[in-house]
Length: 223
Image 1 (tube, rainbow, N blue to C red):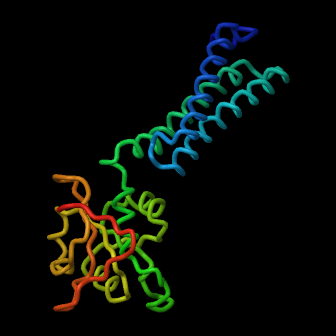
Image 2 (image 1 turned 90 degrees about the vertical axis):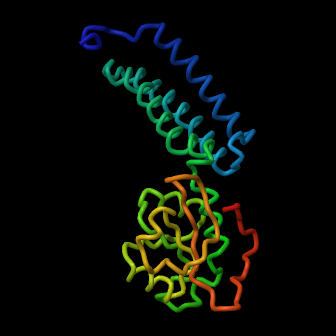
Image 3 (image 1 turned 180 degrees about the horizontal axis):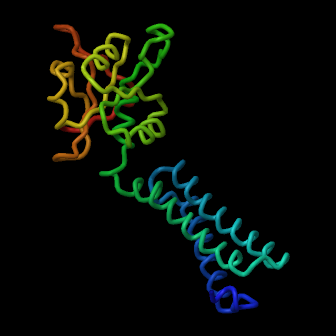
């Protein structure tokens, strides 16, 4: 209602947006340059995205002003940019800061176990995939940090087929493991988080007297 009866954007609004834009662009550049997340690729992507959103918002605002776009659109542009930056922080920044919530170490542990010869088991083999029992929200994080495709598994039959087809690493919540008899003899290779949120990386049971070969760069954590 106010926007419909106002001819121009208040100067104070322009000033606030300009200051906020400079601060956010500077913060984005700082994140990209200094890697405060201890994840160079994530810091670069997050910082670059924040700075890019600020620049895009400023350009859009300038164009809207030049073509005399409706006032509501001109006011909505910086607000939309702020919400987009907040979404980036919640989706990328905060999980990277909070290692307890980030799937990075779990994904790296599973990836270090997965055999490099993804085609060794044939065209339908699972040698290059990471199995995941439940916890569908983890799929994106595992794929991103492990750089491996993920096979979602729902029951004992699918778990057995995954192992039989060459699957070497499977992720499951520790408290859910006992629900699947196919995992009774599986070997635990890595554990992340604690309590009811604990997640484990399992491998198929090794034959008697045969140790599971260690993978270069494997991540380990005390159980």
